[in-house]
Length: 615
Ligand SMILES: *[C@@H]1O[C@H](CO)[C@@H](O)[C@H](O)[C@H]1NC(C)=O
Ligand SMILES: *[C@@H]1O[C@H](CO)[C@@H](O)[C@H](O)[C@H]1NC(C)=O
Ligand SMILES: *[C@@H]1O[C@H](CO)[C@@H](O)[C@H](O)[C@H]1NC(C)=O
Ligand SMILES: *[C@@H]1O[C@H](CO)[C@@H](O)[C@H](O)[C@H]1NC(C)=O
Image 1: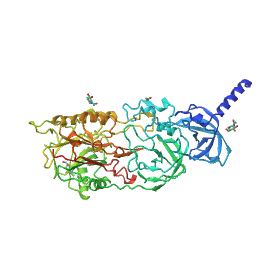
Image 2 (image 1 turned 90 degrees about the vertical axis):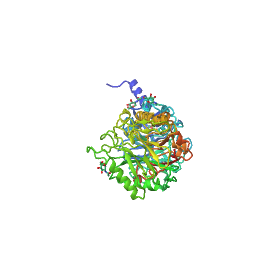
Image 3 (image 1 turned 45 degrees about the horizontal axis):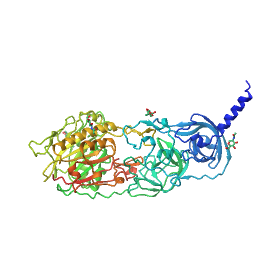
Image 4 (image 1 turned 60 degrees about the vertical axis):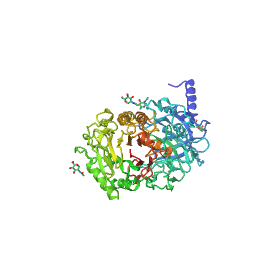
């Protein structure tokens, strides 16, 4: 049937309406395009970059709205073959929203490009400069949907893609990067904030205002500030590879690349590989804290030694850290000690006595003292989580010439240690199993490490002191700070809260028996000071985080480098009698967060404290 003239003219005006769409109109001022799923024709833009699977174009008719990106990705492996950077091109295609996992944000793109025409060539391509003018990355919050606290509990209450808020690029980091999606940008004076992963993906900040910058050049998170001003540099567009040996604080050559969304993060894909101009030193000074050899200056360290097995290649490196950087502390809390057969599964091995013997021997070889060790092995294989067959647990190394267990009574994996009041008034409380596990049958420890409690006495001291070595459940199952889910899922947070409650209640029992007792709870809490599990722990115990006690500057409170943040997953918590003692000192040793990828011994940094434990 021949179409009626009215229909033809309606169709033509629809077409010209579509033809009139600018790139800013396609992107819209929200995360999701108002034209998602629709076909668009004659989209015109300057070709600003080419990649292996498509090209990026920038509008030749920009609007004045900071919230609407003027650039867009055109996905199609053949689209780049007939066009060059500097061409102004027009094309038809379909507006699509793409993501490779359902917890990621979407990338707005034009797919199935057709009728690609070159309108002119040789036009100048000028990158936008991040940090200049109104292109300053927000430094504190990610999105309005976090309600001001990215670690609020409950998390996962909203998805950006569902709410699709209007972008506020001067307030929120995700809105800022989204408002530049597809743009060619330059980062001046980039500096590495964390060693890259094995692919060379590198987190950086440029010459713009930052918060939480630590002395080494990383960005440390603090309460309600998780550093949205950092950005990851992904795979170079020309097929070169970023170096994998850069590290926190390295200065890089200026970077120009495309802002996009990849593997769940906003990223800049550089035109070519990043280059280190001025490497930072990774050298860490040995701790200034040294044991006095008496109860007035006891040194206590804590170190998550990352799946340490008897045959681990990093055994001697851990020993080197203990001896030459931690100055062989009198007492050492260690986490992630694997059993005698390491990750071999199905062999029913749970004891770690050979692992601990190998570690104490390696420490001796490195020039350290003869340490004794204690542990409580898991009740049976694979009940405490971690690498299958590895049966990681906490353990203590101690100078048996200076420290001894107070009323020792070795517990088993299923024995529940309790706080027993002293026989008569004034007698200190003791532990029914020493060393012993705290509430090993509690559901809080489902597939997780039970805390290792012990009571000790230092040579010459008038009273025992008490320790709890923790390794709370991990953040596995969480979602990216750049993800769709808001606030991001903080994997395991409810279980850690229960664990904090059970552990805290045990410690509260010691302090109920003796309010002046010296109690040290240390290890890998897998949580930040300002998040619910630790708040719960502090509320129940009235213990204080040593970083708070010694007033470590906020930006220097970190034991771990993860994505954009330097952060403190490891803590030492102390009872009031230790917190108010002038002898108390505390340091983090950034042996791993400063190191290049190949030199990292463990994923955590160790910490070292000094106490008066005379009683
Ligand atoms: C496509 O857009 C260009 C520039 O924006 C314009 O010159 C041209 O007339 C348009 N073509 C059609 C078929 O609408
Ligand atoms: C967010 O999106 C995920 C993945 O699609 C979905 O499972 C979840 O229920 C959503 N959450 C909310 C609060 O809508
Ligand atoms: C570990 O304990 C077992 C059983 O008690 C013992 O036979 C073995 O000698 C110990 N190994 C080491 C290295 O101490
Ligand atoms: C700890 O757990 C107990 C028992 O479930 C509960 O009553 C209490 O409120 C919890 N404490 C905190 C601070 O969450």
